Image (cartoon, rainbow, N blue to C red; front, side):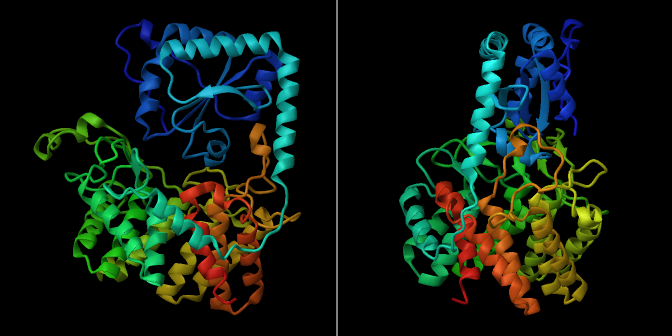
Length: 506
């Protein structure tokens, strides 16, 4: 994926930072030269990242400072979600200064030129004057952090759904919909959970949360009424002032939610909104001839502020055509579900076509799935393995081809072998045999969302195969994140949903 920094207009502007890839060699160089690492964590779709590339990182003073006193490393957050999970400082771009051992010294998100220079000057001086002290302190912090991760064993928490529903009631915006008193994300995950709770309890407050939020999402600033699809975020509490990036992950989550809500509430406008989003994905975020779903489309506030007739004369914002395994697996499931809900067989056919290109194309035998289609995609990420197994289960439910179920079971066996915490329980987000353990990549993280999803996949395989050992693993995987799920607030929706499946037989 290219990292565009803008088109220079003068000879002086042709100078730029020579970014290195995240690698052992970059950190070895930092150690040998006794320099800090400047980590720029960006994303293809991120407007602030592009602005910083064109401004702060193009300033001659920054270029000279970085060239003489830093080892500059740039990471694409979508290609390395494991690095993003450990180094993101509450947004993109993340601008972090690291010790040569990979510990964070200081950092921020977007920084204008003068603020960036001030931060870099201070960090470089500090490491020069206190090199041994800062490295030793970083090692102490890392050791303490890793010791605190622990291997505690818990049972799944059957009180999670009630706790999360109460939190959703408390955080729901009763005036405008959505959650919180500021800007709004789609929050499709928690809305999906609240919809499930309404079906179980018939609590009209739950229905109000879902319908008020979906009405606002479909009619407000989240929705692109010209090209279709949904923007990632709106800055206004009243669903105005959209941040105009469009991510595949948001589209498929919103489509799934809208199709479910259309049935539950008998609201055909939700179905129409889902069909509109499917049309956008089909036109802009998919490869109709070869199969596969693309990752994202760049933000462009000026383009999206135009009417349809004016947009038609311009080139649409660029699309990241990367085919990520976990996202394509999720899209396969959504397209299979849409085929059933809408009676459109071609959606199921495209899902199967995508399976052949992406899931088969990223499979690396005993190593599992690579993160994207291509020779250099990392194969050490839990998300790709679990989502692919889930897609295989869903394919089996549709096709009744035993090979799909066998593939799902084999994939989860590999997941247990490569990602299971043998000293406790649950799955780490990176394989235990991963060779790249630079800095915080040595931290063992058990994601709540992925352990919850893995538990659901294991339970479904248990039900389809009749093998109870899968059920035992499912309960242990969910129990492994019982002690941490509440810290995620509304983001604990995957855990709460998983309890319905894992505890159903109790």
